[in-house]
Image (cartoon, rainbow, N blue to C red; front, side):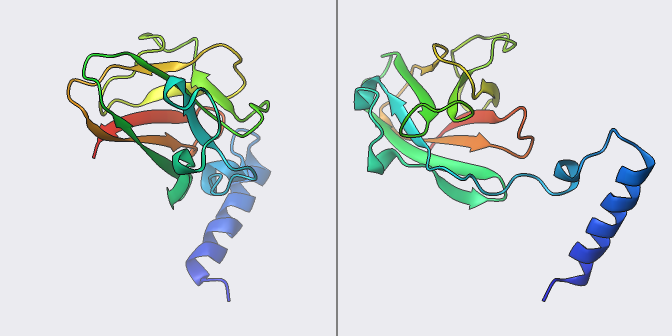
Length: 149
């Protein structure tokens, strides 16, 4: 059974879409499920898609993977990609990102999921487990964040 709130949301979205071409159904119902498995792939995995670095859904349009960084000050390089680095699933930093490839703890950065060479980098201040998140609530401009666990 579909909840009444969801039915009303869809009805409103339909009416708004009929009135203007600037609103899409994705603005109301964000992408929640990927149709491919994605991994954290980097110099620490020899760029392989390893099961322990698989992203898991943790909320609507939000996926996370954990990674242990054991050398403070080392620059770790990585991407978020499926097993084949497929177009649309090969996420690195966006060229419009003012900071470039370097992530800052707790600060979202725009991702480009059609990039071949752009990878993210992060240099931890302390060793430990970190969480890399990718937020697809705006599917055209996903955001990547790294936090300390």
